[in-house]
Length: 247
Image 1: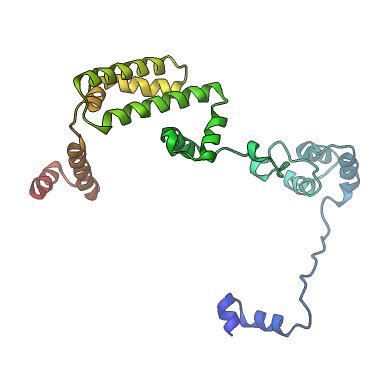
Image 2: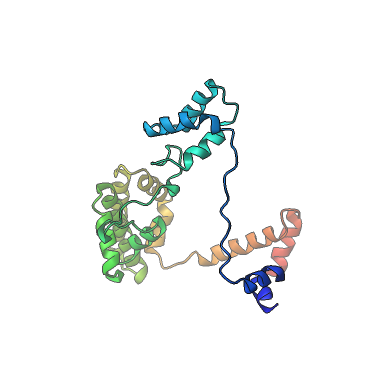
């Protein structure tokens, strides 16, 4: 009974296994008669000739009088196929030869993005090697170079309050970066640069001014939380009262 409770099995099943004189091998299931039996000679001959298109074979059998569905031919062929069908999902293909460490797959896009925005001094040898592989592609090298320059610019501006000359230098560097990004030929980078240029005044102010928009963003987040907590069923008057009373 202890084994039954632990394994989640019926007591009769546990008793049968415990009292067996040898390991109870599972009985081999013998295939029964099939509607394909009269056509096996034709299927084996076509398979021996290297023909493994199950749909075409079903059409041939149908012309010979076969009344079954294509699925029966698919199942028969799936057990004897020497190569995956064209419609087989890639994840079900048999694994190829083991690749070396240099040919190993790259990290996920999110992991690569995180490596691109980190300082070069914070990367270990493995991460630096991954970025070196990525930079072998000219387009990826352009993205990596632009991302690195943009992150360096942001860090320099946010590290400490800048003088007037440094502010002008930062604005000039940002303008140059946006111009290069817009002419990079990479749609994602061009879209990002266009968004920065559209909000150019706010972006340049964020890089040169010591003020933070955190207070405004926090109030917006609180307002959204109150609104969503009412599931959209309350009126504006109630939302206004909740905001004012909480303040």
